[in-house]
Image (cartoon, rainbow, N blue to C red; front, side, top):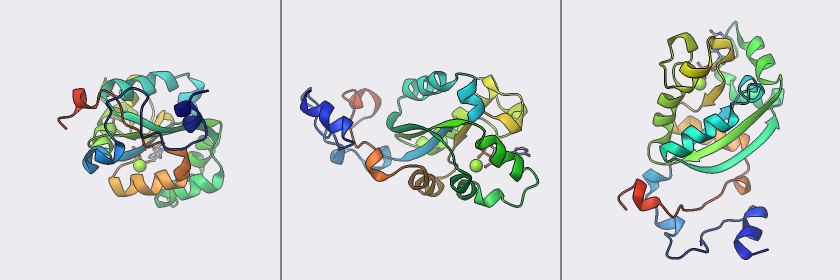
Length: 182
Ligand code: IDP
Ligand code: MG
């Protein structure tokens, strides 16, 4: 097993690709390192939409830096949806979100929080535009397939709620200059 693979499997940082030359992660401008939490909700996992959703973020040019499948606990979801705890739909929301596995991901790139909200579409799926995840795959607000953080501050909080720092990869893509003027 080569060095890079060992580092990846052990969760370490892979700053150097086997293919040189390559940018060092630390040389990438901070605004291109914005991160957001995207989660495929239980209905999205059941409907086998995980691959489709990953494809959209990859094709857009964002970089996957963390991914895992897990059964969300009531504790983590209570914290995640803390601001909605007094809403009438809150108990149903927690039941929905704990009804099966979710696929939690962290995506990185320029303006990724804002762009991913556009890619995800309106909370109420009936208002979500075609071409958005919710506009293409959901008909009702109560089963809207996907979560995306709604601000940079919230993204930071949500990422640290769902991921340990060792689960996130600091790595640089070899096509960086095709996506950004460095
Ligand atoms: P967002 O997911 O677009 O950020 P939020 O307002 O943060 O929307 O609400 C979180 C989640 O709570 C929604 O994605 C949806 O699953 C659920 N939700 C929000 N409003 C309603 C509602 O009126 N009825 C049922 N579920 C709702
Ligand atoms: Mg929200």
